[in-house]
Amino acid sequence: MNNLRLLPSLLLTALALLLSACASPPDSAAFRPSADTLPRYDQGSFAEYERTTRQWIKQHRVFLSSLSSDQQRETDLNSPFEIQPQKATEQRRAILLVHGLGDSPGYMRDVGNALAADGWLVRSVLLPGHGSRPADTLLAEYQDWTGVVAHHAELLAAQVDELWLGGFSTGGNLVTRYAINHHNVAGLMLFSPGFYPNSQSLLALSPVASHLWDWVDVDPEDNVLRYESLTTNASALYYHSVKDVQALLEEKGFDRPALITISEDDSVLQPHRTLQAFNTAFTHPASRLIWYGGDDIGARNDPRVSQFDSHLPQQRISNFSHLSVMFSPSNPYTGADGSYILLNNGQPEDMPVPGQRSEFWFSAWGYQEEGKYHARLTWNPYFTEMLALMRQVTATPASALSMQ
Image (cartoon, rainbow, N blue to C red; front, side, top):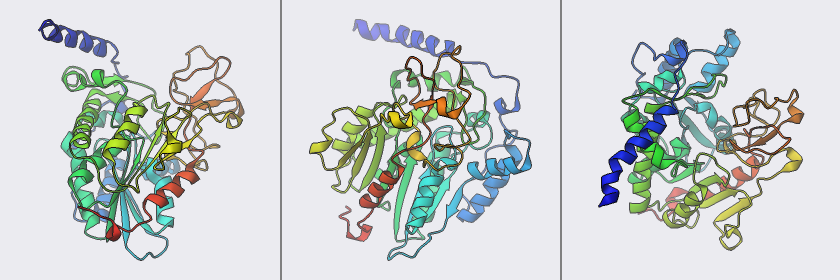
């Protein structure tokens, strides 16, 4: 009883800590919501959805570059996309890919290109509030995020023989939520799914905080693929997806094939809880989990788990980050020789930034080692191996699967 009496004061204390960590944004267009409402996503065709959303982004995005060619690239990376299959297959197979919190459809391009090369029809949607300016996530509601997934999953399912869903981080939560409740989905591909956040108790306060404060974090916006700043509303919507997916996994689980990837050094999530959920909730024998790290997780005794060493000093990689799984080493922006280096990685502010790429080390957020400057790892050295395991999981057509 005493603990229950203390609960309100404990919550207020935690909320005060949360608000004290919040930031005030600069007087910049990126931190003011667009004047109009968010674009519709319920068009009757994907082509119309893609066209109107792209046009909205052109009108409302706060571009990082003033060059028209760079603005075209920013528009391309932040817009929904479709990739037609590059070869004919016996069954028409398709996948709908959904990006994560603060991210963009550009996160899904490398995986999408690989699947299209294998004969898949690939589509990727834009979560409302994304692609334009960080402040636009203040305009989004949870039903916008679940609605865009549901509408385009149903639209795509009506056009093919076999539908899969794929998601990164928050997108993994949203597609899992839909797939558990809808048996028109043959299987899932989940990349660092955001089932179990590392700070769930604090995250639970974000719905309250969203009515009191707009910003959790404000950082320089220098990444064309994602927002570096975070609103309390976006955090609250992510927490809603966490509650939904945790309840569904515990109550129903997922009985069709799934691929899940996770890094044991993921600074955002609780990797071992994801592994536990895979073992208990993802019951299909064709399912696979890819674990990046050196912890003893019993992978040798579990044919459904594949383990890859994430400490690769010959490549100046100390461990794997939350986002690195999504990108090919050859990606021109985020790859091993890409044009962008993510410096925001928890290093001391007074630590000198290396002058040459060859002097950087790469890791998950917050990893530090004396004498080494760690930028974020933004590519997957095992991208080819991941694709091979994806092909294993999807090798059996849905018509041959036992789907209840």
